[in-house]
Length: 355
Image (tube, rainbow, N blue to C red; front, side, top):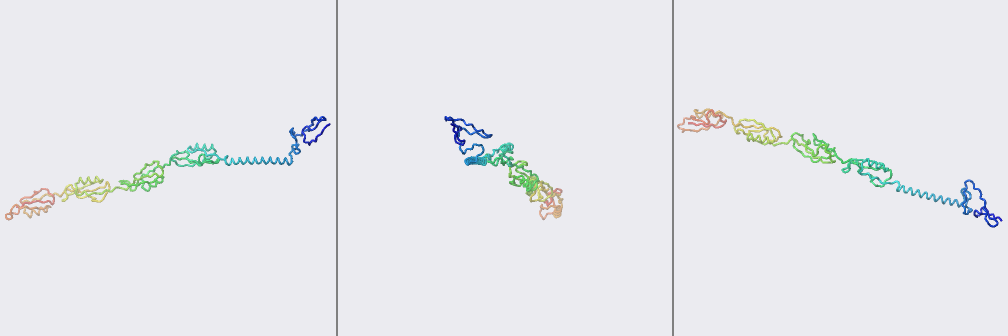
């Protein structure tokens, strides 16, 4: 006897039996194109669709919704984690260590690390020219990828050339020194026989010397010719007077003239007589030739009065010596000294002997 089981029964694949109770295989329905075979050994529930089209059953819709929600949550979580990692870590990197390298090497390192390099220059006493002094940001600092680095490149030590100050006065020299980024130090004055007053005689640095900014430059400027006091040499011997004046830097000229009061060879006068002069100025001296010499006139044989007159007329003074007593005296000049014809200083005394 055949037993028939409904197609929607929840039996297995063997759903027909013979009269002896032996199961008889049931012919399988043909699958349409695109259909998939049901997994053997699994019972189908009434809510499990037989056909491959999407089931609108509430159970399946809930399942699909749950799966979709899980997928959305996973996607959101993945995106959030990825975004957080990028914002917090992924777009950041460390600034390269390029300080102490020359500009070409530093530029290559910056390019390789994906940074742009902006440079400025500055003087440095310790870093050679062309080498990076510093960077901003510092090496190892946390920076955005692709940002730029500001670098300071050394120009070497800051030095300025000492200007030449020849033929400059103090004001001009001060301007030249300050324009060279230097400073004027101690200014002293010195006498100079040829340089104009206030002109620069000497500087503490030679022209062209490279100096640090602000270096102090000491100057020596001219205060003109040195005045020399003129001493009086009147009454001194000619040689001594000349030696005194020439030792002071004066030139000496001299003339001679007779003088009844100043001994021969001594200075009668000088010009200028006092005050001050300068080296090379001339001092004029007048040297005494002594008194004028006059021939003594002959007065021997003349009476006393006549003798006195003759000697006075010749410029002499007379001294009378009486050789005899008055009561026997003839009043005649018996002798004279100096004798007649001898040269004697004018104004000197001639002695006559009256008998």
